Length: 285
Length: 261
Figure 1 (spheres, rainbow over the protein chains, first blue to last red):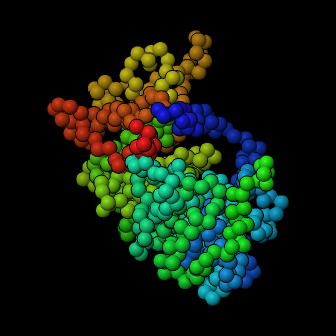
Figure 2 (figure 1 turned 45 degrees about the vertical axis):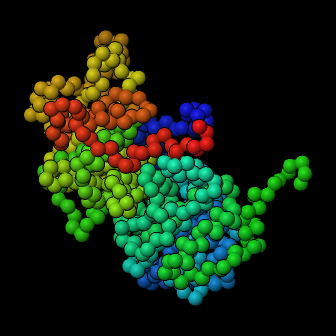
């Protein structure tokens, strides 16, 4: 669709499928079998390392005071470069899932390797009740609810506080004023009813909405009455970059979490993360 | 599953439930927005289900800074006790593989909550109309057997038209198989059929429309509904003053750079 100003937008149809699918009430046994198998294959599983799973089994739920979930390349990069770079963190589990774009099919039972897309849990050594989940893989729409339900369901909801860091392109941000690149990157927050702490950034204004994993986590926290807050970073850079990552810094320092934040990012990790920005294979390199 | 936001679960016994079907042009959802916004309905709970795509935002009906910070989710229930009215607003599409499960969850909630009747706001592709339908008003209704009787008479007096059944094989004269055909209606037909077979009091309001800016369609549908339910008094002159929610702003994107002019 071309707009008044001539730019072409990729607009998907909001029309709903014709309802003839529902006439297929008389599904046969084989269809059901296939459907069941697909559903099983797409199921989300959480795998804890032996020490944690022992604790989970004994008290049934994991004791956790703070859960930080980083979704998207910039948020995950921030966690890698500023938080996990210090020695005080151990990997304690991961989420295993399969879909069309995250084909971990061959190795559903092994941890994602460093740098490979996945959802990995880290625990702080000095304070084991602080967990970080770094999520860099694609999670399909039908798996989001299950992901949030299973992850939050495995934790004791009393005393739990959830922080979600996420990023999205500036083009998705709607405002009556024109946003130029100078303002980006910036943060907007969204919180559940039970979250009472002061926020240092503005709330996400209507008509902006959040979808994907952050939305699924917030929905789950809202109905479980778990205090949760989402910090959404709007950035005008396509690839992960250090300026966008730095935007998240105040989000953790102002929270009552005991997470120690490195004042300067780990350069080695940062370089690895932002390497995609470098020019590749043009005439002069 | 219905999750109350307050300590106590609200009672819906004897209430009328209005809910949109996610259908072409999102007309039902827009009409539900107008009702919630204009009647200042209070949110009483979330409809928490895995059948809808997750979504979150701040208060879509906020009138200023003070009431903006309220997390709203993909499906929520709003209520007005004095009018005996509840609205289930659905804000995202139903996952294609979960339509059947969604239908079941919704119907069982409606049944256990004790609603006296359910009004489903829906729409249907305008380009699928036949010659007869093209010549008449774009609005149609459907009633389940449990709601016929009095309501049917009321609607007939208002001059409403029932959704026509079309023949399964047009042109073949000796086939008298008539079927309900609601293209672009999403779960409308399935919900209506379940409502009939499970003896529920359900009315479906349909509007023939096309995709685009469907705000005028939403006004048409909600005014039509108001003729029947009298949610708001109709002024002697002019139209019913529906209040557009703040979340309808910026439908066509952000502001443009001032330098281009």
